[in-house]
Image (spheres, rainbow, N blue to C red):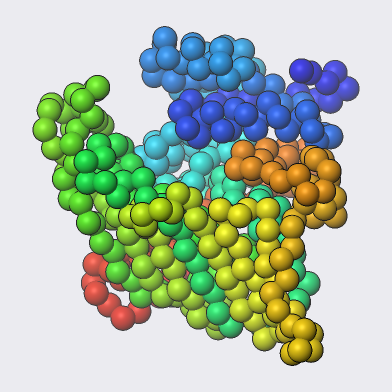
Length: 393
């Protein structure tokens, strides 16, 4: 669907697996429910295998394909490059795209190392001088209940923030027989549960509180150190043949933290929490109130107003589906909940709106770099068994 009165935003997407499909859905959906200032056009999809990328383009709604991502950057009919590939490719692709004058949306975590993230942030800063923008995809910020929580904190409803508790709990590799994947290889993924899901709760807590983490004390653990190689492929990211492959990332991360305002924090990220499929749990306690969120009940925010009389005080269950709540007015009547995919759509709405206004979309590559520095500090603290590791600013 095109809107002749609106300037086009021609998109090239690299990668068409899980994240590629989620981003494709968002690019298709956003202009159908939101009044966007630009008209997103699904111009080209890039993937390494010609047959697979052609099938994906047909299924996901892309007009053309490329099997070389560098060829995508050379095309004059691409304004924005959306990167949905493993972390080891992010820096090369994003820096090249920005140098080619393309806006960039890059999936999280921004990179696999602080050095790569620093190079990406520097490239984004250079590109911004010419009006070319870059954003990192922390989509859980766009869950309406999370955005509403950040609004309550910004409005002072919690007072001085004192405690932050954050968990991201999954169980998808709890079975030792679960096969190897690129997410379990350090050279591809950078880290395990820490970077894959821990990055989300680092970003979410900083977004909700409006503060940054200044230091950590951490422990990492790998519970299953060898896994069967996938029988279907015979090799995986350089690991070939039958038999077992070595897991080179963490399975779980637990760490303490402190925020710029002095609040104490606890973080837990694991892919070994049996029965927990995608439980993102955030609780913030302040001097005037508290809030709590669980993604497995994603349309609800629990809020405690400390000014209420003790006789009637208690956590209030707020169903975040009213038109006054962030993003919700474009969707369904009150009480009709949203799902996982809507966060990606809201990400596109915010990105397109910022680009049309000539503004920096958030979170920026600089924000992504800051999260990368937290992840790096967690790894350094765990490796050194140190009591405290400061995070450079």
